[in-house]
Length: 98
Image 1: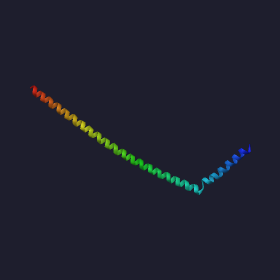
Image 2 (image 1 turned 30 degrees about the horizontal axis):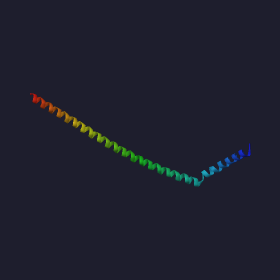
Image 3 (image 1 turned 45 degrees about the vertical axis):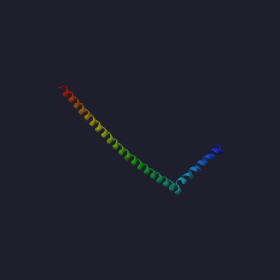
Image 4 (image 1 turned 90 degrees about the vertical axis):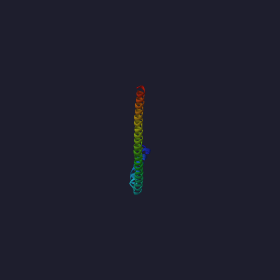
C-alpha cells in the first residue's frame, strides 16, 4: 500500500470522525431547524394554494353545469314551440282543405 492510499484512508477517517461531530453540532442543528421550519412554511403555502384552486374549480364546474342546464331548457322550449307551430300549420292546412 502506497503512502498516497494511506493518506486517503487517514484523511477519510478524520473527515468521517470530525464530520459527524460537525453535523451533530448545535450550530448545525440550528441550521437544520431553520431549514425544516422554512420547508413547513412552504408546505403550508402550497396546501393553501391548492385549496383555493380546488374551490375555484368547484365554482367553475357549478357555473358550467348551470350554463348547460339553461341551454338544455332553451333547446327543449324551442323544440316545444317548433312542435306547436307545426301543429298550428297542419291545422290551418287541414282547415283550408276542408
